[in-house]
Structure formats: structure tokens, C-alpha cells
Length: 229
Length: 133
Image 1: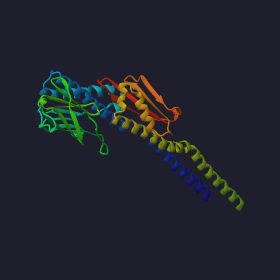
Image 2: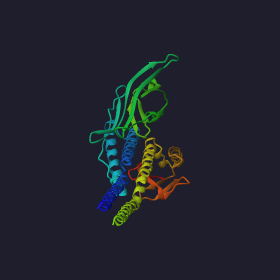
Image 3: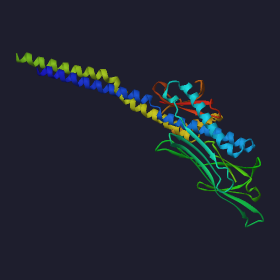
């Protein structure tokens, strides 16, 4: 009788060991199917591409005088939305029934207040269900004509604030740290001197360019921010 | 009589041992996969994090300029030498456009992750697959 109990106990222990082994097998399947992190990265890649495409295209039209400032914001926003919708549709074709092919609906908002000099601002915002994914802003903090201490002449000093923040997750926020700034006046590139202090940039132009400048700021994702000064 | 009982106990004990041994033998591959799960998760996690880093630093977008050396250099620097890796670039039709791998990359013992990047037009989608062994 004692021996039978020993065999029965061994049988139960065997069943428990087998059950534990299959629990581990299920865990393995779960890990292989998990692609959430790279999906989040792909969403970032696609919406930054949408913003880059829309702002570059619109800035080009703005520079060539094909569009006025009031319409530029609307056009850039629509272009970004169209790009996102088309790109995610293409992604669905590539990844077919995979969850990787299903991208969320995002809201794009690209706005410029069209002011010149102090108070001029630009903002590009991407949201998913009222959660901000990207917030790219720039505004003219100060703009003034100043006489030079060392030579005869008047210089136009513009101080601008630039910030590009991407919120990938609660733990991960990315902030661009370098910008490429180009200034145009009546379609031609204008020389200037730049000084940086954190997120503030002071640009010094010849005084004759006051109220005639269109400033192009390119961030690390190749998104164009524009300001009038 | 007592000797018969003793022999029965020994036989029953041997049967119990046999049963447990057979069970251990049967689940051996799954115990091995338990160790493999950790290893696979580790490689997959490393692949995902490497791809994300390359994307967020702008290095991955260099594929659109054909600047593959920057990606190779960055990946070589990020992934520890004890791992083999292969990084491959596919177009939207899954046509292989470019690939680079460490000489000791083992295809059979690898885990991969992928990411999609977009270029100047919505249809210009490239898929980058990073496999680590």
C-alpha cells in the first residue's frame, strides 16, 4: 500500500512538472509576438516624416510667393494628414493582418500666427486621442534695431526660442538639440551672425532687413519651422 | 513473506524513480527552452532597443541617402562583440536592397526585430530588420 502511494505521488509530481513546462512554452509564444516597442518607433518615424514632408513643401511655396501665410498653416496641416493616411495605408498593405500594420489616427496641427518680429510664432503639434506626441514650437522673443558700438550702422537683433519635443512614452522624451537656420529676404539668402544660449538664439542682421525676413529653421528630423521678422 | 514485501517495496520505489526520470526526460526540451526564452528575449530586446536608438538619433534615416557605413559603424559600436548580428534593408515589396553581417552571425540561433521608416513620399517605405545571434 505504501509503495502504491509512492507511485501515485510520483505521478502527481510528474503532472505538475509537465504543466510547468507548458506554462513556459506559452510565455515563449507571447514574447515572440510582442512588437510594441518597434511599432511605437515606427509611429514616430512616420509622423516626423509627415511633418517634414508637409513643412518643407509649404515653406518652398511660401518662399516662392505661391502661397500667403494665412493659407500656409492650413495647407501644411492638410499635407501632413494626407501623408500620414497614405503612408499608414501603404504600411497596412506591407504588413497585411499583422498588428504592426494598424496605426492609430493622429491629429496634426501646423500653425503660424503670421506676425512679423516680436510675437511671431510657429507651432507643429501631433496628438493621439488628446495626448501630445510631438510639440515643436518657435517664437520671436525679442526683435529690435540697435546701433553698433564699434561702427556706423544699425543692426537688427532677433532673439528666437526654439523647442522640438517628442514624447515617445512616459519614460522617454526626445528633444532636438541642433538646428539649421537660414534667413531669406525677397527670396534670397541673407547673411547673419548667430549666438546661442540654451533654447534661445540671437540672430544679428543688417538693419535694412527689418520686417523683410523669412526665417527657416530645420530641426534634426528635417522639419521646417518658419518665422517672419 | 517479509522478504517478498521488501522486494515489492524496492520494485515500487524503482518504478516511482523510473516515472520521475521519464518525466524529466520528456520535459527536457521545454526546460531547455526556458533558458532559451531568456536568451531570445535578451536578443530581441537588444535588437529593438538598437533599432529605436538608431531611429531617434537620426542615423537610420541615412538609408535614404545611401549612407550605409554610418549605420554599420553605429551598430558595430552598440552591439557587444559576443553577439553576432545581421542588419538588412528591404523595400516595400520585401525586396532585399542591402545587408551587412558579422562573420560569426548564426542565423539558426538568432532573434530579430524590425522597423519601418518613411522618406520623402508616403509610398517610399523602407523596412530595416536587425537579427542578433
